[in-house]
Amino acid sequence: MKFIRHITLAASLLAVLAYVPSLAQNRVVPKAYMFGFAASFTDSIVFFTDIQEVDSVWVMPKKNILAGRSNYSYQLRNFCADSLGFKNRTVVVVSSLKRKDVEKKYAKMKKDYTVKHAGKYDVHYIDASEFRFTPVNMDNRKK
Image (cartoon, rainbow, N blue to C red; front, side, top):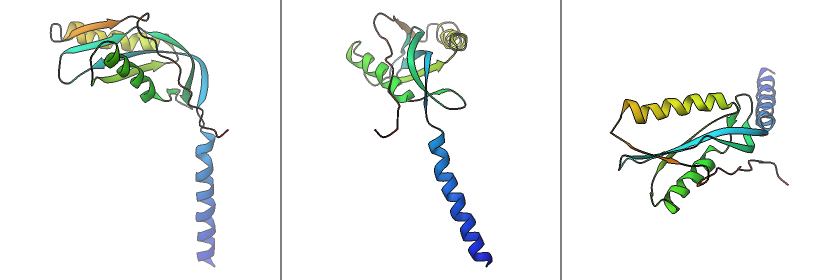
């Protein structure tokens, strides 16, 4: 009898755990702020984009983490390779729903590369007129 009770409990627990991830769907927010940073391990050239406001951005629930970060990274990586001729860049996209948070992270990274390690890196800035992040649709529901 205890065996059947344990099996029933385990089965119901599995059913609940299978249902919970479907509740944690990504959601769209009206706007988010982000900037990109691209560097390579083979040279000292680094790139910073401007801080950009991107409309209709998907975030993961609870912590409002940017969904599809790799897609945004690929956008900048492809731009560096195709338009600037710098292939094999390692790209980081920093984002937040609050501009103040992104500005703080931008200032810290910029200081690290221009002041703290002055002369070690060749820092280039990518203007928003040259490159803009485009929203990525992360709707994973079946249609």
